[in-house]
Structure formats: C-alpha cells, structure tokens
Length: 313
Image (cartoon, rainbow, N blue to C red; front, side, top):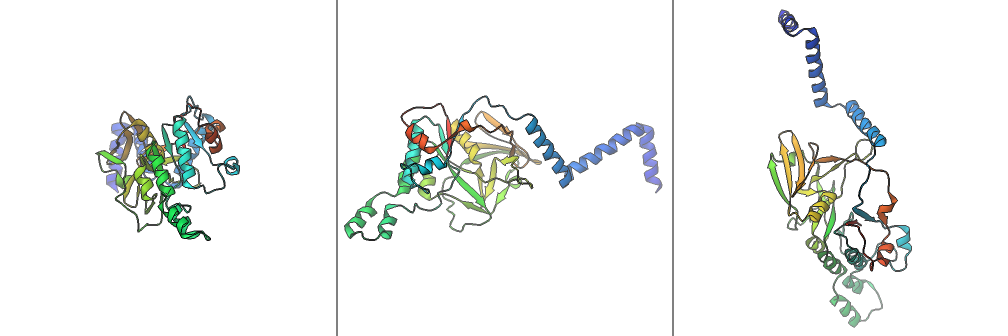
C-alpha cells in the first residue's frame, strides 16, 4: 500500500496535483473511447444528427438523376405492369445513353433468367404449334438483349450481400481490381456470409459491379455507408463508389490501411477518407424532388439530350 502513495506524492511534487488530475482524466477518456460503450456511441451519433439538422449539405451541383419506377410509369401502357421484360430495361439503358448519361447503375439484382425469355415462353404457353415453338427457341434471350445494351453503355450492376451462402456462386465472374497499400484491409471490413450476383451474361457485360447492401445503426438510421465490403469471400466496392470508378475511367480501386484500420479508399486522382471499417459518414442534404425522373419521362425524352451525367435506376 505504501508504494502507490509514494508514487502519488512523487507525481504531485513533480507535476502538481492539477497536472496529475489532467493526466488521470486523459487516461480515463482514452480508455472510455477505446471501450466505446453504447451510451457514449449513442451520444456521439445523436450529436451527429443534430449537426445534420443545423447544417444540412448545400448542393452546388446535381450530377446524379434517379430514374424512379413510380406509379406513373407502371400505369404507362407503353411500359406495362411490373416486372418489365428485360428487353424493356434494355430500351431504357439505350435511351439514357442517348440522353448523355455517363454511368448507369442498378440497385436491383437480375439474379435469375427473365421469366419472359422466348425459350421459356415456348415451353410455357399452350396452343403453340411446333414451328412457333422452334422459332421462339431460336430467338436471343431477353437477358442477352439486356447484356448487349449494357455492353453498349457504361453500366454498373448491383449485387447484394446477405446472411445466406449461395453454393452456386460462380467466382470466375469478373470483379473490380484492387490495389492495397499498407496493412491488409479485409480484417476491418464488414463481412456478409453470402453474395447474390446477376446472371452470368449480364455480369460479364457490365462495366462495373458493386454492393448496394447497407448496415444501419442500432436505431435503424443510416449515418455511415461502407465503401468496401466482403461478401462470400470476395472484396466488393459499394455501388456508389463503383460508379465513381467507372466514371473516372480508373481500372482499380486503391485501399490504404494501417494497423488501426482502413484509412481511405480511392481511384486515380481522387481519395475518400473513411473510418477504420471503410465507412463514409453521410452528410445529408434536404430532399430534392427534382433529381427524380419517371422512366416514362425518359422514354419520351430520348430524342432530347440532358445535362445529367449519371443515372441510377
């Protein structure tokens, strides 16, 4: 018991009681930050929410247009009820490309062949003679038509990470190239046991592939979005960051990490600082209805060019 008292007296004489108290407080704060108990985390994110409300992001440019499948488009007789055949999706891609979209991305997964593929129709529809069935089977699939439209533009297809492992996952399908500087970043990334990908012909035609899976906070609010993740053993960028890579013309994504975690993720000439798990804090702006466009509007505006540089279907 004497040694701690002697040490305290020595510190007090050497540094003074005020400095000793400050050192103790600093050590306590460091331990509290490292432990990061739920009440402290809750206080931090609520403070972040307050800052968002006080100072929302002010937009100086609108480079992204969201093509929203809305009631107007579903009621349009030229488009028809959902789900649309993939030939219709192919036409939308072609129209958006004509309108000047630099990158087109989908936050849906075309994980199964189109149910309206001609060969499926030939086997499904009744009252067809054998000649008609043969002619239908000879037609290209809707998936191939969509893939041709994708390859004629710059399209990023969406993929989804989830809890279920897919035994039929084809790991020979293309993925985005990665360059890593420093420590291995994978141990710090959010990991999903399973990965749901698109049918092979669509995956192979795309200019990029990215996950649109997100991890909400405990209260369900999205404050941080992972820019890079692991899904069924594959390192995958987020859909939004993959759009940036394709738009920039970069071939690979650079991930910088040290022993404390991921520092940044970037492409040629552009780098985004992240937290140790590769997440980006989102600075929200107020809702802007002008960035949403109905597919039926795109359909009719295909003959006119637009200033939008990217589209998100």
